[in-house]
Image (cartoon, rainbow over the protein chains, first blue to last red):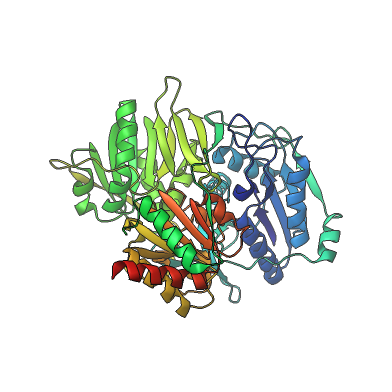
Length: 264
Length: 309
């Protein structure tokens, strides 16, 4: 079984850096594998344990900065390799528009150039943009079924894999037979931290880079991200020392009353 | 004339997105078409006087594929935009449609600004700490947070036509409705959020007592609902759950993971109690108490009880 896991190298919102212009600094903000994509990696590894085969990570430099941040993209993918992924392939190109359809088109081209896969797994959404479009878009472009927001994966004998989708009002179970694409939720697996040995071994695993031209893809030109502006810090950030709870409680309630949100 | 299509699982979904659809239709001089998967008989209550055409999908199978098939029928030609509320099956359906016809899609759009060379769309990014701006050449697909754009009032009537799309998608093997308490934390003025700082389910009574004294509701972060199951999912706040915008959000023992914060950043005021002074929650807080919630919450309860006496 050939299993692809789509991994986004996302910017960490809690470590967001801002340029003097007020734009989010794509040069300096720390990047790592998007949280739910860690679940996708773990799910892919768990599937490999049961079905045998290979897990291949696919990624794209959606935040651009391909020369400045090549090391960071690579570092995030090395982490996926350390978790147990067999090889990683990254489209490193500054022509990405930040529009999910262009990313999906590129990842579809990359997976075709690698001969296609039986199962594609990705996170339900990335922690920095939360667009939630990658699995259904990739599936549609590749002409495969898509199963989104999968929380539970069950296999019995040789029948279809039972996937339980976690929706707002219900859990819904469907049967899936490869090839298919799925997105998984944060509850779908418990990502395991790599051991030191695994981290060392990751450096000898294949990690390949491509440009959009290499895989024959290009942005549609129908949309592009034109700005990513940091919101002006509008929070007051008033700290209250809680070591004397009664005093701190009075202070907090006085402040909230003054703000008019709590009545005295 | 171009078209703006608003698609939903039911008439409520149409009400939740038609406000935005109308803005886009008016700005582009498009006609407005409403499509629902079920409850077509009630569609006039959401669309009459606003939309010029209304369709009720008939067919069997799986929601995202059924909506996709319907969109391919009504939204293929002269399209300006397809719009839905940001709900999972609809985000899924619109993403498939976008890829099928090659139009860009943006989720949870907060602003549409008409421009001569094509509209600018904006949406939140980085857990609500940034705004992303896009320049788009129509047609496009977009989702909006339910209720973010108020629905215009309806008038008169509209003829709802059937739209048969046959069997679509995989067979559904089983459906298990989620346990609900029926609380709507998104309408509360004050929400007390509980997180992993609580050591047991029983201890949550502290938060409920505080919420009761403040006239608020209790919400929670992911671990409390999804991992421990201490509270039902209708109290879960975050990117894959509810988004709230109360007057006051009080975070108790919540570290401030982006996934949670993106559900609360629109709160007018945020207060936080956490014993870890380095917890990211303090970056987002107007008032941050560095202290143990097990001491602070009883102290707040005691003080409020004195004040309320």
